[in-house]
Length: 332
Image 1 (cartoon, helix red, strand yellow):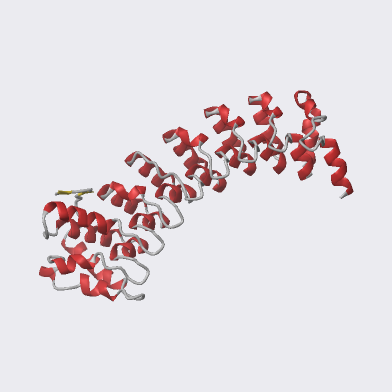
Image 2 (image 1 turned 180 degrees about the vertical axis):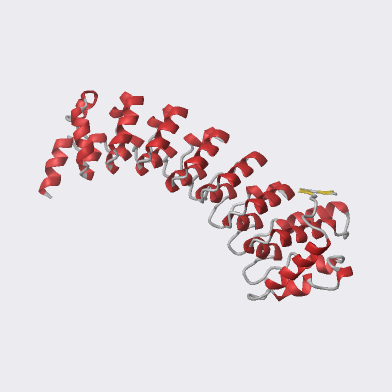
């Protein structure tokens, strides 16, 4: 059976498992006015989900806006989720077109936090359930919650490469991140999930140049974290990202200098020697940043590197050389 926006699926179980699923439903009936779960899903066998009344209860939320599917997905009962969805898809009420639209609406309902049933599966790192929902309704993969978190962002942030690959393979994905511009790739770098990062850049190489709301690229994040392996990989894929600065004109090299990551500076300079000439909006170079943050190892490296010796006497917009700033910092 095929309905609008949905794909019919085969049940995970037959008679005994069906009874077991119905018994598990009773375990979910506890708080926040979820007693409708019992009333809706434990009627007599012949009438189960056979009428409009029972069908409509699938869309009835509790005080938190959770539908029965939200609750089952959160608890992690794939058998119950499969049972509810299959009963919904096989119900015979209304005409075909309206039935498809209604079922799509139920599956895509969001609770008071804006989470769909797929969000709940993602939060539990439940690959089997995530695959199930995506197979039933691919459109679920594009929804963001109230904080702007997409399904892909959650899976990437939490370091679940299997779910990341599942989403990327299933959809031409556009909802990469959060409402604040934080991308899924940035999140994986911050959390240190190299395998997830690799999966993302292979599937969506354009993410490498994607910036957040502050103009920071994934290389900014990797440089800030001192993640040498990730910096190397990003530079292999798109060396030009070295020259992308944020809203303040700060380059990844500036960030590495300020954080004291000498190994990152060496890597960037080896790839792009002229990147040492990059200035922020205040006219400050990498050595200015190292002096301001008191990172002696970076200062020493720059002073000992012939290719960077020109930075020593370079003045910023206020006429200060790195030496001027060093003198001022010592006095303060």
